[in-house]
Image 1 (cartoon, rainbow, N blue to C red):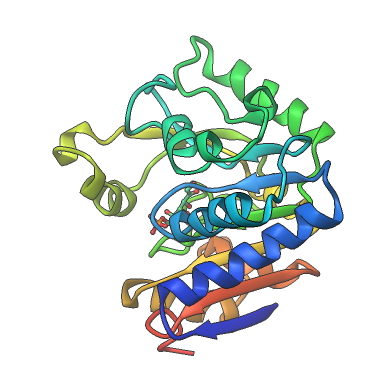
Image 2: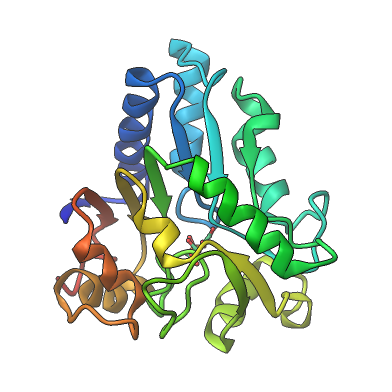
Length: 240
Ligand code: F6R
């Protein structure tokens, strides 16, 4: 696991974008595994800037996202589908037909998980972007999710509901469930780039990098992956 410590969020975002842009330049047909949340927004802004200024093209790129809230349709402004369109897809030349997220509004959620797992079998991520939950989750794989898990229905923990309530009008509006790639789906990526920022993540970063490899801290599984780059700002790295 390579750990890069940056001065701040902006430097973290630039470095992460450089890695992703490099993957796309080397392989115009790359499969990008993408994440939502506050952590990768700056990364996506740098990718958009590079697309506009240097013309890096995503025409033949496809994407698979980590997760989606249950019960929100793709046009809901807190859905991850909406997040991806407004924070990245609408501002680059990716063919949106080649972008994939689990559908949290599907009538049969288990069937939707099965569909997404079958899709992931055909789409190995050249690079998977991850953020880190303050409880060590990756995707929505909450503590004690088995390492061999695939896309599944998740009951979000109180901790995650509280963390994510900042983006909703009230905590009551935060969905209680999500569909998430499992840890096995994440670990199949050829390479992984994690972006982490802020003091509230410092304990999780320490456990992930230096702690025991245990489902109690899902991100610790990344110690077993051959090609992981963790880019964290000084605050997130403060306990290393
Ligand atoms: C988002 C995701 C989550 C977030 C994590 C950190 O698709 O899978 O694991 O990466 O909750 O969220 P932020 O970046 O908002 O602190």
